[in-house]
Length: 371
Length: 98
Image (cartoon, rainbow over all chains, first blue to last red; front, side, top):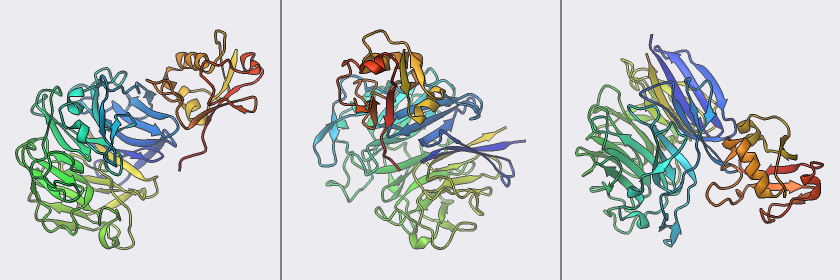
């Protein structure tokens, strides 16, 4: 019988939540790496028991952990992230040039086909890859070096590369996103990159339609349709039908188009989910009501999903990597909050229930559907 | 033999409890002690000093014999009681964070 494993990264450790396909009874394991910030953990599609985790503290910096048994045991692997060559400078908050300096790993994306290959999105923004199961890491310098890097500027959370999408139909194509530079694409396996931000408008930068400088919060795609991308920008929910060459807004009737998390239904490529957040300063749901919004039309027409979610006095946030879906017949949708709740819906968002209520603040949620 | 007391997170990472004793070729300095420590516990590389620059991480400090040695040169000899093993070199995680 199929089962589900939910991988939760929090401010104070990692937790692994498991259930059978009914998704009613859950076992909670953890905390792993107690006291460390776990920005992200994710399993290999090619070997679901191979997991990678990004572990960080202000005292001791970055660690990468690897598991070969689905998260029961872990071992530290390589944590040396050295920029290729002379790193150069990007813009600091005040517009002055500032040298690139590695701070932490925000996102780990295992290869679709090789358990030993994993990509890492880091702050200050760069993309690294390991082909030896995390022992050593090499940068793709063509991303920082393609020409606009010196104009990139950090968002409020730092200049992080937070989204990595691997095209399942084309191993040479990778999409990434950086706050606050924008989205970028390679079509040659990471050697060369170009910005893909045409159609984005950000009124908070001097040229609202600039080539770079947009605070992209998250991008998702359905694996069957990798040319269609959905984006939660700082403000605006956006869609591209041409692999990022152009974007158009699909915020439609959302109560606010600010937010962080966004994901796509496992079996319906035009069904997407967002969690609207009131504004870029308040960072909590409008009216204190935690609502996931679902569009079955690829955007523009949105329906509030509220059953089982708190509809009063709720002032949590849902961060960019804290939503995921499973691929069971009835698609499960999951998200974690900064209040430490992880909610699950086993029916595509119609009904929700908390798996856990009192974890540390949730940074990331990933889901594995196991045979 | 140099005696070292590691902060809790690093003891967990290294899989050790209590003090760590390591052999260091004289002279015993911060650098030679950390080189020997990282050779024996490779998972600690990058957690006490930066991989590339070798700089002490800002929230890690080195205490011994009731003195803060954090700002001394990494190549300065450690106090004789540390070099002889009479006193431990204490690596401290700063009181910080939330």
